[in-house]
Amino acid sequence: MTAAVSPAHALGAPRRRVRMLARRHPAVAGGMAILAVVVLATLAAPWLAGHDPLFVDPLARLRPPSAQYWLGTDALGRDVWSRTVYGGRVSLVVGVAAAAIATAAGLLIGLVSGYSRIADAVLMRAMDGLMSIPSILLAIALMAVVQASLLTVVVAIAVVEVPRVVRLVRGVVLSVREQPYVEAAVVAGSSFATILRRHILPNTLASVVVQATYIGAAAILIESLLSFLGAGTPPEVASWGNIMAEGRTYFLVAPWIILSPGIVLAVTVLAINLLGDGVRDMLDPRFAGRL
Amino acid sequence: MWGYIARRLLATIPVVAIVALVVFSILHVAPGDPAALIAGDQATPEQIAAIRGKLRLDLPLYEQFALWLGNALHGDLGTSIFSNRPVATLFLQRLEPTVALAVMTAVVAVVLAVPAGVLAAWRAGSLIDRAVMGMAVLGFAFPVFVVGYILIYLFAMKLRILPIQGYRPIAEGFWPFLQHLVLPSLALGLSFMALIARITRASMLEVLGQDYIRTARAKGLPTRRLLFNHALPNAAVPIVTIIGVGVALLLGGVVVTESVFAIPGVGRLVVDAILARDYPVIQGVLLIFSLTYVAVNLIVDLIYVLIDPRISYRGGS
Image (cartoon, rainbow over all chains, first blue to last red; front, side):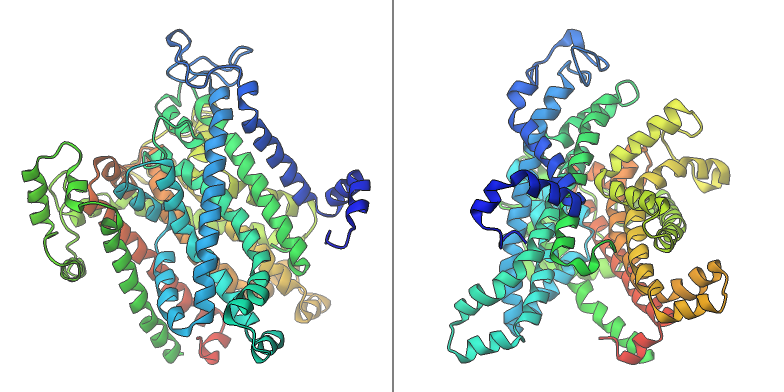
């Protein structure tokens, strides 16, 4: 879409392009705007926080939101706003890392599966099996056997999401490999690796990018669920999930501990999903407005 | 038709086998000795050896799998490390609340979301459509437990019209039973509803654009009959499919919802098992929930035959 615009032209009219994006793809523009605010806020956490997110103040326990503590304090007297801003770093990293790992692994397995019949038979049965296990439960079970750390949480979430990428990539490969231009490349003597890299991979990228955004959103949600159940990020790491997990016991007296990070998390996930939906519609206008 | 059903049943066997293999393998993919893992950090070598003997972890892996699978097929899911009681017994004791919650949620979700999706498609672009789709987008964004706490805050703490937490068995009266399930099933059902409403709308939009719908409208068919008797059955296959797929959301969400609402079901059994590293319990519940999901989707595939005769003629591969 923007590829045809010359660099000079693009630099000359950034404002017009933003306005055009907002008008033609409001979901993409809206999602990007919200996401930008969230990302910038977590990057600027030291300046925005106002309090040390780890500072325990026994005299200020369970304070409701006020001018001093914007979103109140938790059971140890820590500032919920500061913890939420810093916690965003953890949750966003989990989202991005899980999406990256799941997409990379899914691409690899999907390409192999789409190209080799024997590997396909084995790999797709394995993926069917993995997809038949409810994803949250599989992630819980994986977390139960490993030492809880940020890395294991990311890997557990990625494992759960991989089959979706594999199916997507395999489908594209199966349809693309029958195309005349791929046959032509084979006849012309292109190597297997070249065909994969030059002809197959680029065709999968559009849908994989969209899928990656959904995985990022799902990962942030799953991290919060795992932490909430005590099977997620180690408790000393203030992810959004852990802040809420700690607020459970006090919900009736201090609902802000759960609701504040919960709403921030929901808005973030919403923004990522809007972005994903919007990009999908941009790439495939046939379905725009349908799903 | 019978050929299709037979093929579909046969195709389930490898899936079940692989699910069993994955569930069995989880304990063995982790680095280190599974017996030491189960025994915990403070275990003595004797305790670890006792667990290894009890779970037969000294056998070769394939023998362990055969043994475990054979027992599971006979309804023996092993013994809880923590309470020393059979996993199957523990599971059955906790089953009623979980089934009640899951069934109630599924019914509420389908009954609310399908008409909402139909309405949104019929009035595409209208305020109703935007409201329904807006709710659907929100439904995907909130973690189940946050929705649960928001509902508790609004309906139990502020309005005081529903109980905060807990569960009443159906034997203690239908009304209290129902009252305690309203908020949990709404919390659990929100993402499920979002999924169903979105697909219903998309599928209906597709059908409503067909010529035979225009014909039906032209001959003066009342709108309600047009939508629900002519259009909806033709849009049903993707909707039924997504309901089947969404059951995974439901089964995973049950664990979280039961924690929020203090419902003593299978989900709580899992959460307690995680904290106690009670591995046979986690494995057993994971296996049963996964097989339930496989069974639901098998039923969905069989329902296709009823709602769309073309599927069994096509050979249904």
